[in-house]
Structures are given as C-alpha cells and as structure tokens.
Image 1 (tube, rainbow, N blue to C red):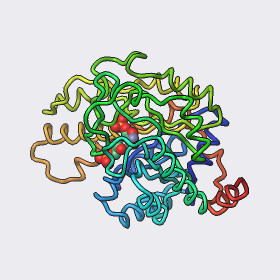
Image 2: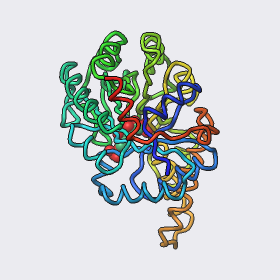
Image 3: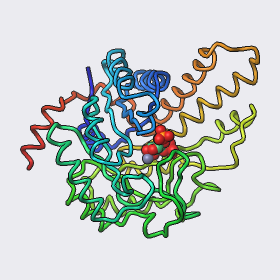
Length: 348
Ligand code: G3H
Ligand code: 13P
Ligand code: ZN
C-alpha cells in the first residue's frame, strides 16, 4: 500500500527537480487510465477529487475506487488530494475518507464564487493547516484568483470560479504577499494565479508572457525557494484532440491551453504540482464522439469507454515523461501519515 502525502511527494520532487501532474478523478475509468500510465512510466501520481466529483460519485464509492487502485498498483505512490476545498468541513471530511492532502482554497469565499480578502484567506487556511497537520495530512493554499488576463473573467464552466471581472492585481499573485501568506499559514504548497483558468477556453491565441505570467512564478520562487508551487488550470488542450473532437460532430471553438514547454519552465522555478482535468475530459470525449460517429450501431458502453481510457492513458504518459516524474516512483519510500503527524508536531 503506497498512499503518500503531498508534502512528502513534493519534497522528493523538489529534491530531484521534477513536477507531478495532479489528475482529477470522478470514476473507475479515469482511475485505471491514470494509474496504468503511472505504472508503465514508474511515476508517482496525485489523484485529486473536486467537490463536484464527490457529489457525482459519492464519498464511499470514490474511497473504494481509490482503495482498489492502491491494491492493483501497489508500487505506485498515490497522493489522494481534495481539489478546491471551500471550507473546513470539506477538507476534514476528505481526510476522514482517506485523503492524504487537501486544498483549502481561501481565495474565494465558501460559495466558491466571491473573491475573499487576504485576512479571510489567511484565517481559514491557517485553521485547516492546523487541523490537517495534526493527523499528518498536507495542505495546499491559494493566493490570487484564477482567471484570464485577456478578459479579466474567471472560468465558471465547472462551477468553481468568480463571477464578473477582476483587475490584473487580483489575477496575479503578489510575491511579497505570498511570502507573508506562507509564513502565516504554514501551508505545504501554494497555488498561484498567473493567468490560467479552468476548462478548455483559456487563451484565444498561443499565450505569450502578457497573458500567461510565468515571470510571476519566477519571482515567487526567488522569494520562496523552499515553497512548492502549484499551477492550476494547466491543461494544454492539445490541438490534436480538439481536431478529433470537432471531426466527429463536436463544436469546440478555437482555443489554446498552457503549453507543456511553459510548464517545464515552471518546474525549473519551483512548480511541483500541475493540475490537469480538461485534457483527460477532452481526450475521452473525443473518443466517445469518434466511436458514436464511426460505429453507429454500437451500444455497448465498454466499446466507448475502452478507447477513452486508452486516450486518457496516452495523455497521462506524455505528462509524466515531460514533467520528469517518470522513473521516480521506485525511488520513493513512503512515510505513513502518522509519522508525518509526528514530524509536524515536532516542528511546532
Ligand atoms: O476544479 C476544477 C476541476 O476541473 C474540477 O471540475 O468541479 O467539474 O469536477 P469539477
Ligand atoms: P484544467 O481545467 O486546465 O484541466 O485545470 C484543472 C484544475 O486546475 C483543477 O484544480
Ligand atoms: Zn484548480
């Protein structure tokens, strides 16, 4: 059994200068595709569960799926992470279900729509960190709001994100404020706002530094060299998968994601966790469309799901290789959460 905390995994990634993709999971097929790709590349992995996923599949089902994945892939260190926790209860109930890590996203208020102020963010993130560390679980905080520097808008496509428009100052994490935030809260990892947003529609053209502010990551890393940086909204939305999707009746308008090369640049400057959901959704949906279009008499769901799993597996393998986590799984000796709790208690 190899359930690892985010803290231990990202410490290892920092020591060996690689990044770990954090893939969102809602069901068995995504779990199998991600873990099979991790096994075939000897990569540790973060599987993250949104509140939407918990509502969709249910906590008991998700917990059992994750236990099954752990039993099927015993050599792979798996970090089980709550994505965008909106309050203390969401984070604690995730830990209750076996999660080894939680994100307390205090950049937004509990409704996951209203931007919160700095003091609110510090207070709630500190509280979650205090409680999670008592049982050895890790905490990711977020400073700055995810949203487009092109339009000033958030991405509410998945129900998580601010409404209306924000100015540049709220859409970019301030490096000095980040330094104070990390010291005040004690978080293990920090999600930053650099112009990325969730979903498929991130940029209207191939992003330049004006709209994808990788320089902000460099400035934060210079001030906080020991803090693990998290990039949200980091799907690359590959043109090849857009083409398959659109060739079989899909209607995705022209769009650009975060180029893999920019993520690799981030990894050289402290990025250790890279959140990817849309790329697996797109690859799977493109294959569903292809099957529906080319095998019109087909009605066995497995004939739709198997190619979708293969497509998701291929995307995961590419990211494990590109981010340098491939080949690292067998080098990690997992520290149990109880031992992590002892280490945190020692530090206090
Ligand atoms: O947080 C963003 C992820 O893409 C999760 O989306 O809430 O629709 O599961 P979801
Ligand atoms: P994408 O929508 O770019 O895949 O981002 C997912 C994410 O950040 C989940 O927290
Ligand atoms: Zn996110």
